Image (cartoon, rainbow, N blue to C red; front, side, top):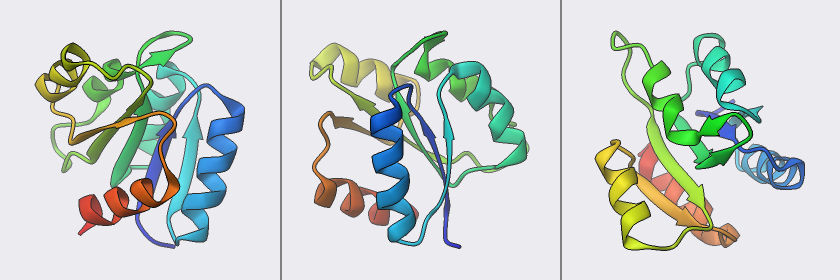
Length: 119
């Protein structure tokens, strides 16, 4: 398998589609639907890339960033959100995210961004 991708999103429809799409492009995908589950998954499945929604059932998706051990290289963080405004983009940049993708994310855009952050 290729690069490890942790998808953190509570929508079953979106996670199913992302998992099928990314796996068809050679990525090794793990899905988490909550901040708590994602925090646990990070130690079992150290990702190269994280695709994270901002609004999760148990909190802000950016809270997951605190779970990465400082002893390991930090993965690329891509936020997926329906909030297309300057304040959201600034908040994500301030948290150290590598990009913001506005939902619905066009498939070709997602694959291009994934390839560029993995390279």
